[in-house]
Amino acid sequence: MDDGIFSGLKVLDCASFIAAPAAATVLSDFGADVIKIEPPGAGDPYRNLPNLPGYPRSEHNYAWMMESRNKRSLALDLAKPEGQAVLRRLVAEADVFITNFPPPVRARLGIAYPDLAPLNDRLIYASFTGYGERGEEANKPGFDSNAWWARSGMMDLVRADEDTTPARSLAGMGDHPCAMALYGAIVTALYKRERSGKGSEVKSNLMANGVWSSSVLAQAKLVGAEFQPRMPRERALNAVANHYRCRDGRWLILSLLNEEKQWPTLMRCLDREDLTDDPRFATKPDRHARSIELIGIFDGIFATRDLADWRKTLDGNGLVFGVVGILDDIPNDQQMIDNDVLVPFENNTILTVNSPIWVEGSAKIRPRLPPAVGEHSDEVLRSAGYDNEAIRALRASGAVG
Image (cartoon, rainbow, N blue to C red; front, side, top):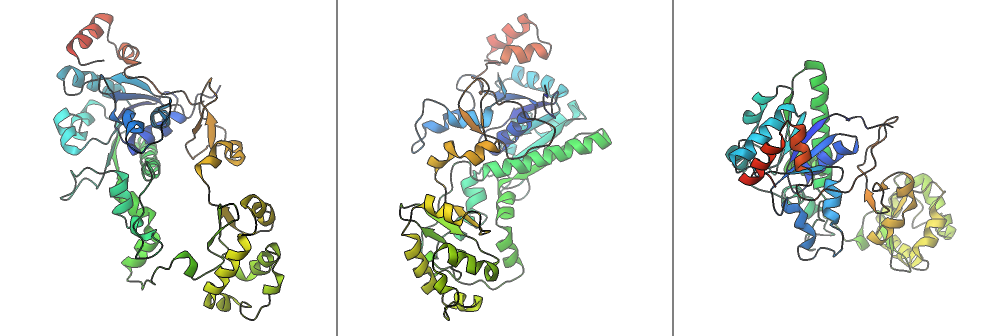
């Protein structure tokens, strides 16, 4: 059986909330041995996310299942010298160390790059922050909602118009794309190590990833482009790149960029071939000039049938459109299941969201359910050379849970 591309790779996940641990999850999907370092007792504070106000209630800790599958938990108090000594021993044999602790906390705990790099010249030290590691905001804490979503302009840009209240981001909405950036940095550093034999520090942050996500319009602003006022959906400038509500209340979105070619096909699918040569909409400039009128016509047409009917009608005609999905769709989305976007946990029927990359010829491992706090402490310590007496001493000191 294929144990994964990263089988034998030792990764220390000394991070929380959410991008940095999620990068470790991707490494684990490809077979890396990821040890989750978390405080004794309650463990990583991220375990408590589903208990916060407004989050869905479930018997399962869905947040922890997503970010900590496949990992082994070592409950370690890094505020204690004994705990720091254990971590240093693990670092000496590790391939990757991942953290998003604020820089002052790293310095206090002795886990900054200058502290750990001398212990292992092959170590990849992956650092993730909110706003980068230089400048007056280097030590400023941040979540994706503020450092990625709000700071980048996206929170403002998705508004229907300037008078609409800015939209809130979803839990982890920016963290998971950021995780892929940190994963890419780690893999790049591993490739560099293959060539040089030496480890290195890699960095990423929420703010940089946010501007990267909004970079088409950010670049337009950087070159001094002239922006047009944003219009609400009913007054959009292009009716065939707009979204419409169906009879059952569900929405779909048209994205017909090859408009001249696709216009007759769309009219046939909508059973409005009379509009194909209608003088009001005969050419692309005509349609754009009368977009408000055309949107009104489309609103009336799409409101006559349910989304499922429209999907059958529009599919297979070369028209680019998409369903505006809702969470209820996901558990039974056959396309997601067929493409391993959703995969079951090992020895379980519960599905989880797969990391979004695949490598031909190298299967991912079957995801394993996440660990309890300190579930693997003894196992990890023994593999690091601690005997039973030493483990008892560490427990007695409170350094290990």
